[in-house]
Length: 418
Image (spheres, rainbow, N blue to C red):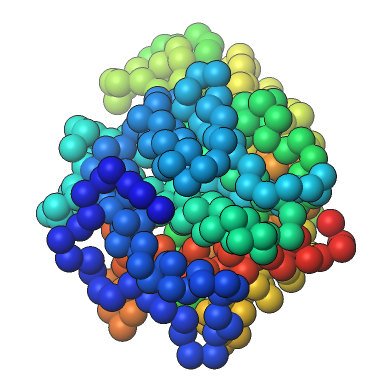
């Protein structure tokens, strides 16, 4: 591996070797990782200090493509230049791995040498780590392929715009990212777990995340004469209270549906009933079946709630992402691989998250699984949470992530279930 980036003068800690109880990597990959770990840290820090927002990941994609090309691979940039697809090895059957490239529109609040140099843009969700781990996976597997020890074909998908709506996954799929793919895997940073642990589960993993906009209009007037108006503030109150309550009676509780309003506005004066009001919120669902019927159901319930008030209502229901439902067999493969990579006691059951993740679009096409990569500092009570300006990771998680994904690639290629 060769990189033009400057290696960090001092890493957070020694580059992690195999943990007690873990199986060594094939070939000389343990030695290879030990000698190239600081280069991967350098790449992560460069990405962290040069974040790019959704759909503008041009320099990030170019860096990924350049590093892969230097290793002798043939990466393919998307026509827009903000994503990369790269195959390693040979064979008709393909196992894919996905990383996301984009950063969030947040200010980086950390005081570190690799702090973001871009105002109001920061890698506060760990996509710099995801990209670095997948790049390390590709470089390690290319090393195996050179030795004739890679028993199949692996595809790396470096995706734009995971954080936006509409998101980038459908674009990568349209560009052929899943052509010939039998299964797909991904990981996500998780600061609630210390570095060296991963969280795995089959079934629901993250929720669908949709947006609802409600606009009410009607005759306003004096608060002394509400009977001459549509009383939009009262109507809005009905919408924000009754709609979530009614959904709980119309949808199976096991679907894991949550409707929460984040913005409500109507009027200015305390003694004037306004003529227009707005509410905006999210609908999150763990069940694919419930998600498919949600737009029609939510829209109709809102109209039914408003009807007795006399107000006119317009509902805009915007699809976000489907729920991530991890395939049972794929989850078993990556759980076993993670146990081999880190030791069985370092694989824990992941919690379900009501957050959204557009990896779900890939899982609608092929079986696969996402896991949570521990990024917290072992022994520390301080947790730098996702989507916060002070988010950071214990960089040893990069090495652990590469080990898990190398073992997963080899295990998935050896599995006849896909």
